[in-house]
Length: 361
Image 1 (tube, rainbow, N blue to C red):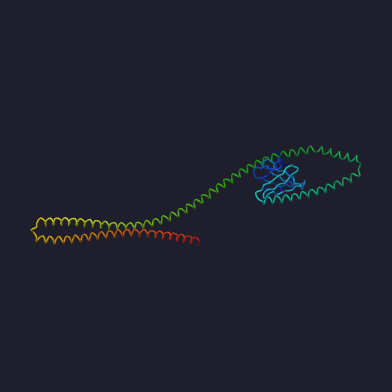
Image 2 (image 1 turned 45 degrees about the vertical axis):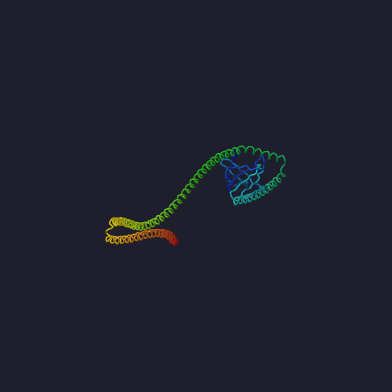
């Protein structure tokens, strides 16, 4: 596992998030994902060395540790992907961003850092040339043996002082490794808790929206059912009134039917009486005088019979007319109900229009 030593005077100057890739070392063509998800990618500036680095850490694993030099070039290969080659790491890094704006900002910052690295290198070269000129001038005034002894003495001093410095740096590096491991574990834990809270918040938001929508839907259905109930109630009252009228017509028809039965009974009695009289007229031929009377009575009965038949036909005609009026009344009632339903619908629309107008006002 690789660890990065963050020097005390190194400062982050730019930070973004992206998916990190590295070129496949075997094929040099395919990209290999270095992170499972988008990670933090930062530019760091070392004040003491005047150098710039791009660093990215995924958990406790360092996936980018690239020192920027003036010879590097950041290339945009697509709207959301860019790459650069690091000769020191002997690889090519690729970054996939979530938007073109993030890629543009990263490329602009890369160009700024590259120019700053070039200026720092030029200043360093000027200082080196100046110091070398001074050393050459001082070397002309001292013998070569003295220079050699001086140089050897300096190297010995460096050797004597190198071991404690390395030990100190190693101990500091170990401390930073432990701190980095702990911070990475804490970051992972915080990311999991944050993701859990986000999911819980999303579920609560969804449930709240669904409950609000359900309440509104139930309110609308309740209003519709209430209006429908009022309309049906009024329609039932009208139908009850019409049913009472129909019942009265039925009572009239029943009375007429009973009257017809009575008349038919009287007609049968008259016919029986007429038969008896005819028998008597046949049995008693000597009663001619009475026969005339009987004939007159018979004629009167026949007239009465004719009148009764006329009445029966009249009653039958009245019954047919009553039935026809009843059918006509039912048709008119049906058309009236249809017109009434249309008027009720118009009244309902007019009421909703008034409600909407009142709400708008």
